[in-house]
Each structure stands twice: as C-alpha cells, then as structure tokens.
Length: 86
Image (cartoon, rainbow, N blue to C red):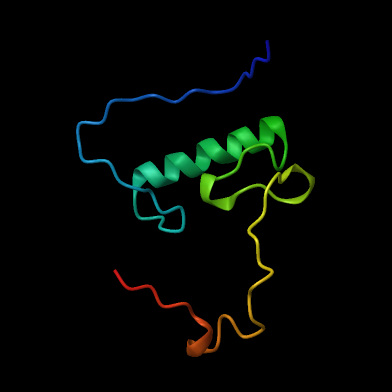
C-alpha cells in the first residue's frame, strides 16, 4: 500500500470563501500566507511547495496540454481563436 505524508490544512470559515491573491499585499491574511509559504520553502527546499495554479514544472510534470493543432499566431490572430456557441 502506498502512503503519502504531508500537511493537511483544514479550517471552517465563518465568512464566504474566496481566493487569495498573493500579489496583493493589502491583506493581513495574504501576508501571513506568504510568510507560511516562505517558511515551508526554507524548510523543505525550492520546488517542494507550489501554488496549485502553477502546476508542476520540469521532470515532475506528468502531463502537458496537447498543442499539436495550435496555429503559430494563436494568441495574436482573432481568426485563430475557436468560437464556441451555446
């Protein structure tokens, strides 16, 4: 049986849940979150703690987006952006 060990963060929030923007330093919660992330990185090394939206880079990445149908100007030509109608 394979087991994994790591921190588990659980807390019941009394206010509506929302995402924290790490780039915005105006909130005390964000400052505490940045401090906690920095402490974990110092303790366990770079690349061991990641923000979920960052994904995994390098050799640790097990998947990647299929891009074989992407056009050379997929970010600059409006005609190359797929249109989805619902």
